[in-house]
Image (cartoon, rainbow, N blue to C red; front, side, top):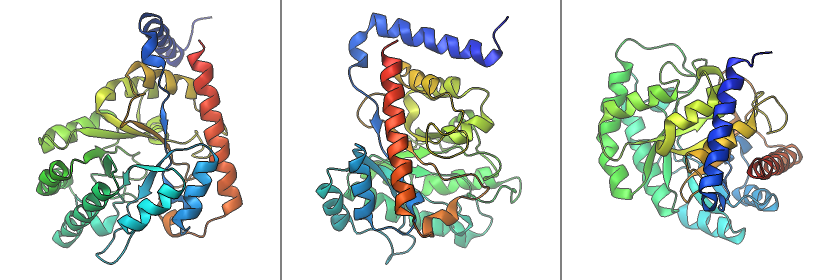
Length: 315
């Protein structure tokens, strides 16, 4: 029986992985850096979140970009103390872009809100030693386009703050998101087009998300290879957008593709973000947490990811 097309692609990645491992075994000594995006924990004290991650052996956190105004959001010094108590380092900050702070908006006040928000998050990201700030070109939860100029407006708006990414030495990680949630920038290729349009040396990286990639890419592993060195963070959830191991995601191929692009190095993170299904996940950021459920989800995801990583490295 002939293999299916996705199986052929899987096998190509597996062969590239095995060949590289045979030729350059030292490149596989370092394991992938496992982080966690905490905004899905809702209104939970950061100390509780840090304790949970440490208990599951997760040494990095992607912090909720919650500086929605000058008087809102994490305090940098307090954040570093809380995380330091649990030996957790900051991977980066998850920028949150809704219709209220939309880089592509046709209302100037919302574009200005996006500029001000990015400035606050850049200062915070640098203060807590985060390496990237996630940027979404268009509002999450708004799949209907404003008009035919939203791409151009988004590019123009991000250019306004591009120099500050360089000033703070923070990488802009542009995230493509499925078309059920955003009106444009859905694939790795779209993110590359957007970055080329911004045309600024400080805007050059990508935040992938395997949940969105399942819908928008023809093959997740090939999309990871296409992102290559531009990929600095990869959000993870299984096919049902729940804990890893609870769905049908081909995690082994994802892991092999990451090793093939040399992703197991400092400043590159695999970051679970299991938010559950739905068209707009943002309400979860202000929800009431269920600690027992979250403990189970984090423990299962971390354990399953490391088990599959060790299996793959043994091939």
